[in-house]
Image 1 (cartoon, rainbow, N blue to C red):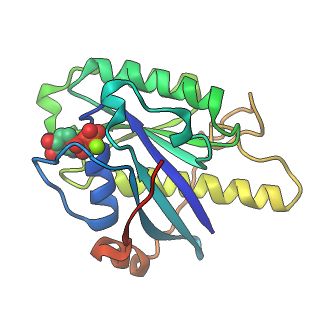
Image 2 (tube, helix red, strand yellow; image 1 turned 30 degrees about the vertical axis):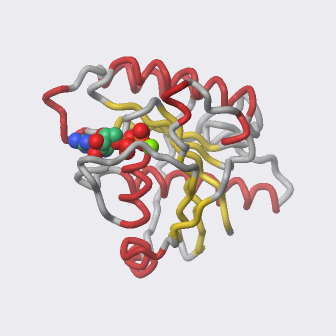
Image 3 (spheres, rainbow, N blue to C red; image 1 turned 180 degrees about the horizontal axis):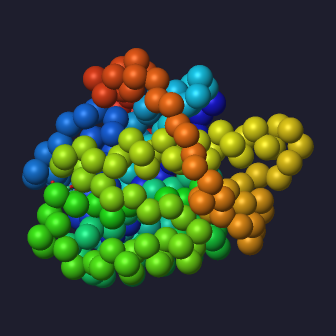
Length: 220
Ligand code: GDP
Ligand code: MG
C-alpha cells in the first residue's frame, strides 16, 4: 500500500526538518528554506502490513501564502505542524485544517504536530489551546521535536494506521474514514478514545532511518 502524506504549516515551523528526520534520520540546525517541492518515501510496517508513505514537503510557498490546493487535494493524509514557540503558527493550523476540509478528500486523515518541544522554555502556545483545537477538528495531537527525534514515529504511524483501517473498511464494503481518522464520512465521530496498538517492524524502520527513502523530486 502506498499513501501520500502532506506536511502543512506556517514557514519555519519545522516541516522540512520533520521530513528529513523521519525519512533520513538527520537534522540540521540551519535547515535552509525549501527551494523545490519534493517528497521522500518511507516504508513502515504496522501489524504485519507494509505501508509506503510518500511524505510531501512544500516548496516554501507557504511563507508567501501561496500554497494552493494542488499541493494537498489528492493527499491521503496530512500532518499539520505548528511551532510551540510561535503562537501564530497554531492559528495557521486551524486555517489549514479548514482548507483541507474544503478542498481535500473527505476521507483524508489528519494529525496535528506541536513541533520544537526541545524549546519548551520558549513555549508560547498553550498546550491546552492546541489540544482544544485538535479536539475541535477531530485530529490527534502529537508533541514533536525534529531535533531530538521525538514524537515523529508516533505521528506518522498514527496516520498510516488510520489509512490502513480506512482501506480495510473500504474493501469490506464500509465507508472510508473522515478527517478524524476514525469516523465514517463527514461528521463521523472520532474513535480516538479507543486505544490504537501499533506494532512497528523494527527492520523496516531501521531501513528507513538509514535512508531507505530515496530522495525524489516531484513538482506539486
Ligand atoms: P519549514 O519552513 O516549516 O520547512 O521549517 P524548517 O524545517 O526549514 O525549520 C525551520 C528552522 O527551525 C530551522 O532552523 C530548523 O533547524 C529549526 N527546527 C526545525 N525543527 C526543530 C525542532 O524540533 N527543534 C528546534 N530547536 N529547531 C527546529
Ligand atoms: Mg521547508
